[in-house]
Image 1 (cartoon, rainbow, N blue to C red):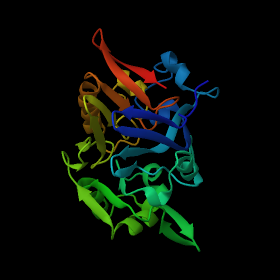
Image 2 (tube, rainbow, N blue to C red):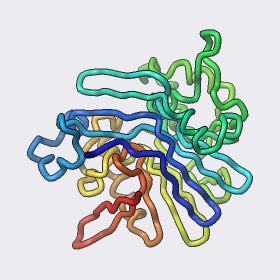
Image 3 (spheres, rainbow, N blue to C red):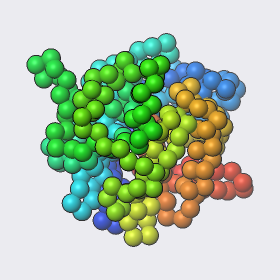
Length: 281
């Protein structure tokens, strides 16, 4: 049976990448991918639970490199979100961080692929009813286009308002192509949000790409034109997916999909003109 991905890790020479589950989400597949029909999903029943809901992992990543402990995204944090056909449950991040042998104070960099609630709410917790940063020693990084999108008064922010206020005096802006440590480079993958980013992690001749929400399900590996209902610019998001598939198909490259079920790690193979996802556990 399909499940949210468990805690798991990947070694790239001197780099260790650990997936930290925070919870899970359930969606109606045709609501999440509104250009699809029930017939389109017939070959992908293995991605659905017994109630026909698409299972999505929700979590974050630790990159342990020489002299640095980096958190990529921060999960949803404690609580539930129920809206229409969407169910989201968070709150496991800190226990899984402890299970990985780390404490919040060990994190020296937090990088956000984007600032949706299921990627940013976990950076705060309530202390005496006041929002407080969970990772007190961290530098907080995001692409400038992602941070600046909230300058638009029409941009929804109510579900991340507390987090944005905490980040405002501490956020550091970074651009495409910049490396905040030698092994990690920022890739611009706009479309899901204006300033959405992925990360290229390189060590020796090995590569891994943390995809953020460039892909929301492995089904988009085979169908990159299937639009996610949460993509701010669907056409730009399609371009980002198609370009990323070319990168993922390169030798010695591992893809890491935050919302992929069963396992977040895998490789993309181009066979007979079609991209395919090969899961790694």
